Length: 338
Image (cartoon, rainbow, N blue to C red; front, top):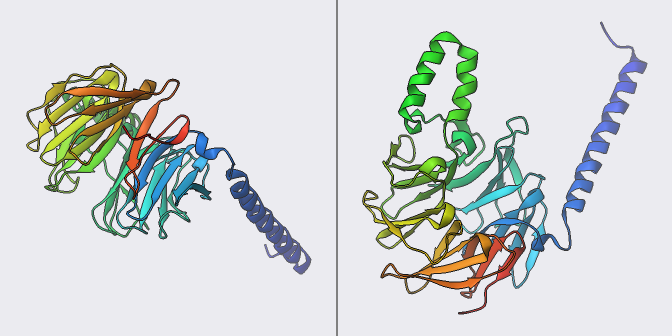
């Protein structure tokens, strides 16, 4: 049925009004996102892009450090969890609602590459091998890959990281109920919390239920390690010829780059450890819940450096002047030199 000219004009007017209202709403949303105390609220990651520090956190908050922290606008209100820069200007941020943001100017402006509120699953880490080829990982085995710089992201399902009993269960279910099979399949993989690349190119991925997996082909295939710990691991760090993984209740483990022979490191606390960074002398500085800051020396000994009451620390980074910054539930804080 064709529209009358009057109805056609009327429809165009309504469409124009809707589009104008939508643009204004988006602009208002971005303006409301800029808050004077945002840098003191929940921040989940800090990254050094070789020119400045960039940080992200709750409600889509993003910050760039140049003598002081400046909040910048982003096109989302999703909780942002992790950052990665492949070059000083080129980087990505991931977060809840399977959100992937991209920046081409060192974090000053951001655009959406992927987002799905319907999925209701967070992406927890992102890693790029080149400016075109990268992967993003997250809760319940979320795994996406791009070969065009993030213009398109394709999902991968890594069944090799399932428990054997879950593989058998899914095979039986697939023969009986395809819909239920697909539903169950989407929840059985553990959370993939962190993915990093070692100096020899090996990928290390850690996650829920003691997941420690390695890949020698940029994550196309994974080998699940028979690891000595069954709790959640939240981060991994490689320093020189050693690898460290860390997680719940002060559990930290060290291995050489064979990534086979792991040894537990005794810490002066049982607080959950969330992140770590290499200091100039090869010491590994860790941060975690209950505000703990811990050093692990080359000898394997550890020392409590500081404990910040009422804080949970989840990220640590070094600026161009050598200052250490931490992020957590109380925002962005510069550590005093110890």
